[in-house]
Length: 102
Image 1: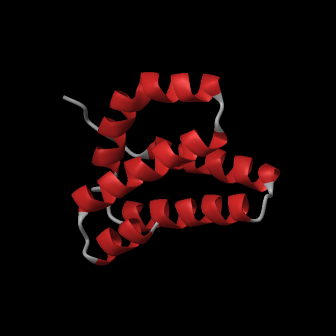
Image 2: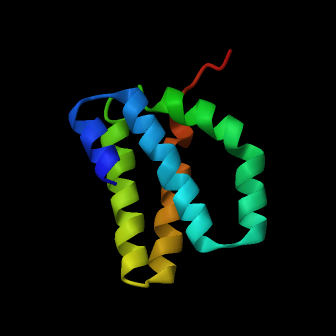
C-alpha cells in the first residue's frame, strides 16, 4: 500500500501499476485458494493489460487505491463478507472504462 500511495502522489502510472500488481499477487497468495491461484495465473496477462490502460483514465489510480485500502482494512478486521464485497466491487469498478486493445 505504501508503494501505491507514493506512486499516486508522484502521479506515476507505471509505478502505481507495478505496486497494484504486487497488491493483487499478495492478496491472492494470502487467500491461499488453489482454484483462485490458478484462475489468477491464467488471466494475469490480460489483467495486466487492462489494469495498465485503465490507470491512465483520470481519477482511476485514486479510486483503485481507495478500493485497495477498503479491501485491506476489511481483511485486517477479519470481516470476510465485507472483504468479499469490496473485492467484487473492485473487480467490477473499471468495467465501464472503454479500453482499446491493440
